[in-house]
Length: 145
Image (cartoon, rainbow, N blue to C red; front, side):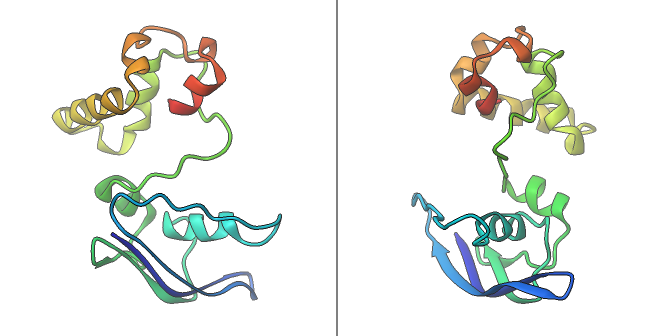
């Protein structure tokens, strides 16, 4: 499903990731552990397309995604990055937040509706709270959103 092969990443001219290689098969849960500054976030940001590798390759479902733009990778292939912080619009409802989260596919209303339905299936509590202001959700519910 996800294959990272000999990936190297640099900030400016300083190489911070040197030859990371791993596989994640469908259904597996993987945890990246390391001390502060070890490169955990850099690896994740590179997989999500927010950073480009200097060298090496990243494959998702056997398709090389190392050279794709972030929006292509994240939206079109279903790869998602859930940052630590609660990146929500607190003054909007749960539903409005989901619509805003689908901004890149907003012109395809049917696809947007299907994606929101998928979110409701993964996080049923959000369906029951779809009219609730996101800022009034519990911390865990905000992270789901």
